[in-house]
Image (cartoon, rainbow, N blue to C red; front, top):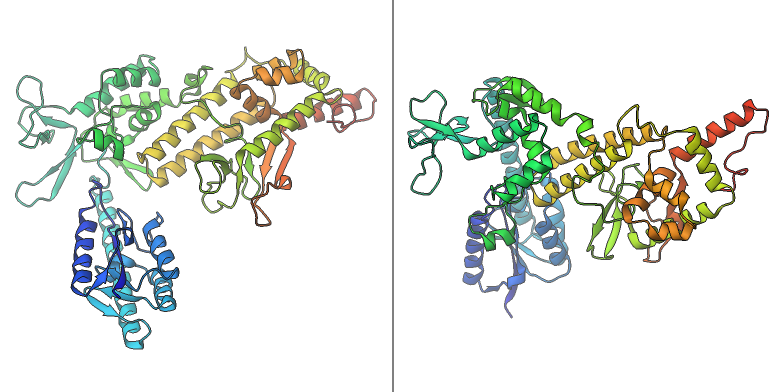
Length: 551
């Protein structure tokens, strides 16, 4: 009976997502299997494209996890990798692999050599290969750190190519000279293409005729419109109507429909991200700090860029009650809080064990996941009971009277919160499309959440929720809630309640109501304190809530 083989291929960098390096690895591994009579089924060829295996890796290797699972299940006899570094560049990652192979009696093949890990010499040599791979990864990292530091000192470009620029290389040595927003001009204002259809970059100090690249012209035009008071949404609508390619990475479906990989779908958050990037103003950023003027030419002059940045960061631009992005689709997404770390929970769909769930995605936690429909039903039931409590509606009416809406003294806080939540939805779209790095996503997500918390605390003083007013003016609580749309229901819950969800303490799929804490929100607590203080001043005994705490 032929031995059962498992092939694993991995490559750290695959910027164009072609997988050619991994294809070559798999081809050589398959050749070894054919030569040695090892049968490898199609579903036993596992790959991790564009995934690092070093200790500093930031993304999980799903393929490697699948390999460990198949080995533990006893489904294979031989694991074949091109070389040890493909399996792991970190000894701590290799040890579980070695233990899994040893426990299941699976041999390891690396560089065409077969290791029986139950033999001490083979186990030692395989571990030595892994240790060497770890050292090589450390050396590569040290070289990269030195290169990054040196490029920062010289204010040279480094990292991902910014939108609007093209890299210029020495024709003889192939070394990077700089990046430029200019391309070769044919003399009529139109850019020149090479034999492959690519535009030809030109350095600013070159004597050759040049013109701003089409992408740079998009940013210049957008900045001009922003300074003229045009909204980001309107600018992106115009770009989409004209079919201007966006910087978004193409999905697999897009590549199937359009081999060129052009995505003609702009989003306000994507355009804003490009416009507030100091790189387009000719500034060098290192470790998140502006360290001065860069070597490359700006697309937008620094002074103009500062004005654009000031306009885009002005909260009054977001005072419109019209959502900037797609409306929320879940009752408690970004409202319910994780009971372990306090972060706002997000909605996830099509999960393996439940079709819709609220989950904590906060780095360092991610301990809480709960089925969303049952939590929604529980919270809605409690809201209805709260409004049916004797004296509660009268209590809210009094709270409105004591806190007149401050529409003449500042921006509409409800509208600002709605706009900020829409900005976060745009950010989620960028993350899902892979248009933003994990580090940048985490920083933006934290910034938006902090601004939301600040706006929510400001909303406690003047009640600005029209949704709550509609609830109070409805003929009955059930009718008011039934007529309310999702946005209104979210507003009421966000203003009145503090929903906290804790991690499961026992196994099983049964819904545990004790995991969900529904507490009074800041508005209720603050209103109770105000009314209790007023009662004390008038010589009446203080109460803990409306009608002696019946709510």
